[in-house]
Length: 256
Image (tube, rainbow, N blue to C red; front, side):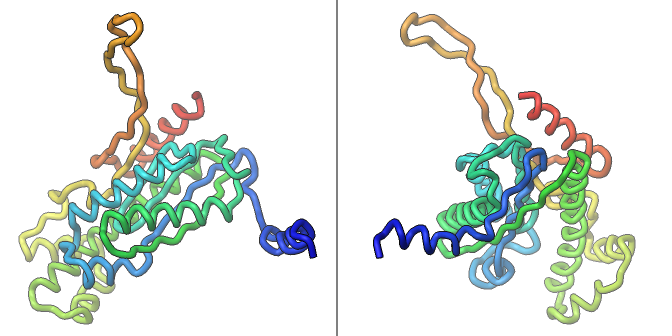
């Protein structure tokens, strides 16, 4: 059988179930670390519950993803997860979810592994959101998840560092209200409100136009130039203020 005939015969098995995100739908990729608890707590000596080296590696991974060929207008990271908001009119690979998922997971895994010096893997899923209000709520959901996870993590690791084993620490915080968890931290001299906001709210990364001066090599005249650069925000707002933060970012980018 000739190659062209084989290609036609077999390629359909690769592409038969291809699906595309409809035009006019917002796309958000959520990328999660696979088995990162073991990777960061057992194989590598990262500080618990939060480590600035790990934080910076996640931020660099987000920046890499925002520069790898897609029009991504906002990135958010907390713990070992990343959320990426594509521009509404992004049409790379015809918006095929198979392509988006495999490339995002692969690029994240490669970038993080290169920094870590060890194999690290991420998975990916795509949320298809029909309006900007749901995009706002999506990122508010992840923002509030960061807050909840930070409170639980600080409680758990303070217990572990003060003589409790895994099961004891887990049972100790099980069923506790937010106020009770805060009281638990107070017994160890920790005020949750005083902890860095990036631990409690996550980190945002977005594009910003920055003006600078340069010299035209042909005319030798001083000129003003505008270039895009990624800005990292470690002081994200919460609640309705974060909804407005996302809404303004979407409106600004859709006007471009």
